[in-house]
Length: 415
Image (cartoon, rainbow, N blue to C red; front, side, top):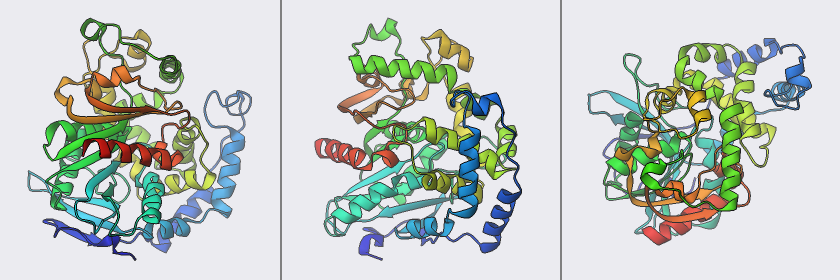
């Protein structure tokens, strides 16, 4: 292993090297269950509707066969383990201790910028392995411009399960991740990049903690209140993006309401069968991307979720973002989908989390609900924006070079 595993500061928290190696018995049990899992019958919805109602029978059948006979989890482990991985023990304010897994690359260059990448759902830390690969290829440890930290959010992968005796919020996750950065010696300043749930977490960290010096996101921002912001300007490509968002709200967003309102039920359901889990999250990788990921990449995420019991542990943000968080809806169709009142705000539009630090924003055309620049600017100190002609919801996985270049340019401007 290169010197990228050497911390620039002595951690003030307990941090241990970590190697991903699922026990052989667990892997065998997974493959046995996969072999015994039943694929439902052919129906009009899964054969004759061109994917309108979700994943198709043919895709599920082909992917199941590949999962059983070709996919190699051990090769996924090898790729993960080619990067430094760690487990940090984070003492919380109430005296509890939480385990946070992270992968990363540490620089030996003086003045390197601490940079944390935050994933969302149904993603995971592996989304950023492409970016880590690019950085490792381009820079020797003494030339790397960043200390890169890629955590698994609480409840995901190898990070610990949120408490079972109380609700867990995005603020709780933000607090732990801030403590992680401070515990690694980066209390003097760090930059965040996040998408999806990671963008909400990054926004909270940016708003609440002085150590966060900037936030770079691609995310969903709802229509700002015209009574407050007036009629905001829109480019033609942004108008097309809003049409995409309308279609997603009407035909693609029901999963979020299920996550938010029947968390336990869907958690048990998808924990009972690998094929059920594959259908639920595989659909998102197929429909939320510009360039369809390889079957192996989709299966790597599905297998990680299964082997670590991620799915039932990771759904807590949806209660906050879809049901309980104050969300302001200007479009009645959105309100009907989520049963929202007109006086509520979503996380990114919450004035409490207005980002006064420098904020950057990347626009990808195949995002599930692309956000116009003028809308993003109502939520923080937007100093950097760039639109792209390709890329979707999983930009770090789909377009790692593009996203890394955006982050590079943003940091050069604000750091």
